[in-house]
Image (cartoon, rainbow, N blue to C red; front, side, top):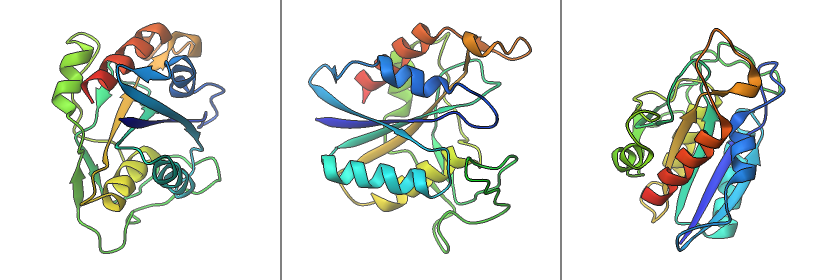
Amino acid sequence: MKILVTAFDAFGGESINPTERALQQLPDHIGDAELVKLVIPTKFGESLRRAIEVAEDSEVEAIVCLGQAGGRAHITPERVAINVMDADIPDNAGYQPVDVPVVEGGPTAYFSTLPVKEMVAAVGDSPARLSNTAGTFVCNQLLYGLLHHFEGTRVSAGFVHVPYITEQEKTDKPMMELADIVEGVKRALWAV
């Protein structure tokens, strides 16, 4: 089995994205699964195009996207992606959509096709929780777009948000040690 694991570059004035750091520390294999690792830009449209291109070229069977959710205290696999882009801040290309569909005429929402409850159980109760919203920023657009593109195929897709890491020094926000995020993501990948 091949799993594409994506991470975003830093955005929103940050110099660090914990997902990019975590991706660098993931092994090349989890059990019998080969990991295809990809850092994508925090840009509407471009991140999705790049992820689809690599997923198809690499003939992966699953896609696990990682994203930063500053303010969350847990590793959170996402259950749902909705058909809207509505950004509080611009992406890294300066684009800030408001109430724009991800796919014009597409379904209202898609459910992740990954085993999200099993992923939460594999990570453990204290650092993981199931989330019912991937937000409306690039993370949601990526998940919705992947689920739309690969609907009806053998490729499953989902998204996992992670908190800030302690290096980001967000004293007013929940943070996790990078090592704990890496371990949690590895366990979630085992469940996939």
